[in-house]
Amino acid sequence: MTDLHPATFDIAGTFTVNRIGFGAMRLADGDIWAGPSDRAGAVAVLRRAVELGVNLIDTADAYGLGANEELIAEALHPYRDDLVIVTKAGVCRPGPSLEEWIPLGRPEYLRQQAELSLRRLRLDHIDVFMLHRVDPAVPLADQVGALKQLQEEGKIRAIGLSEVDVAQIEEASTIAPIAAVQNLYNLTSRHHEAVVDHCESAGIAFMPFFPIAVGEHAKRDGGPVARVAKEIGATPAQVALAWLLHRSPVVTPIPGTTSVAHLEENVAARDVRLGDAELATLAEGI
Ligand SMILES: NC(=O)c1ccc[n+]([C@@H]2O[C@H](COP(=O)([O-])OP(=O)(O)OC[C@H]3O[C@@H](n4cnc5c(N)ncnc54)[C@H](OP(=O)(O)O)[C@@H]3O)[C@@H](O)[C@H]2O)c1
View: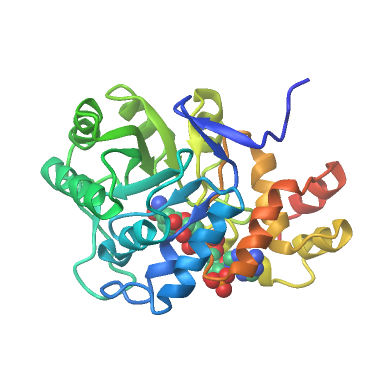
């Protein structure tokens, strides 16, 4: 019988990850220049994640302008053999505003950022390297071509894309194999349904970012998520994550948190099962 709720997914057919990963962005984003204010707390969250079996960690050169990658190395290096680190390049942050994320996909810049990520993460290759945003000012073939060259040189293993549509995935796939896609997707942000379906049919990992709507799904009382949570003895955040796991076996959510208690709750969502009645309630919207 097909397992509709597999515990793991093989990224690029090679990297087996448990399907609840960890998004590290919030551990170093309060102040993009300085990194986390509670460094010991951030290290503790990362170490506890790995202890709980999380082996998919998401970061980017832009998070804390490199501080996030340095933090991951400080907490987890030397890395466990099965740990898969996803990092990204392709946006720059020229000012302190949390809103200022500017696509920059020039090939020479992507190559430079990959070298810096390797250094900060203390790696000799990056398992999954993503184009953080498609830069409209640079041909997609040049941006993906830069990643392909890094792959051919052995500096990165698998290539990913972020915030892309199906046409962009198809175009990029003509240049290099695309192993992972990271788009905004959760119970209430569903405009990437076609991308999830495409990833499922192409065997591409789909890593929804903002999987619990930046905490909103955990907070809202009285709606369908809260109702389902109460009925099955789970928390609303767990229901939101379980819904993503149920959506497709290629979905690997990367919830973020600065709290060990929330982390433990989120990881435990891998054991939450939703039946037809719960899915029908969630389909009402929240
Ligand atoms: N590719 C991209 O362009 C892109 C864009 C954005 C994010 N990302 C990645 O996606 C990851 C996930 O996104 P995110 O962290 O922004 O959003 P998220 O996972 O949807 O939500 C995180 C927020 O929810 C709260 N939270 C987490 N677990 C909770 C729980 N069990 N109960 C109550 N509140 C809870 C956290 O606060 P506490 O700290 O208090 O728990 C935090 O404020 C990021 O860390 C990053 O790695 C990628």
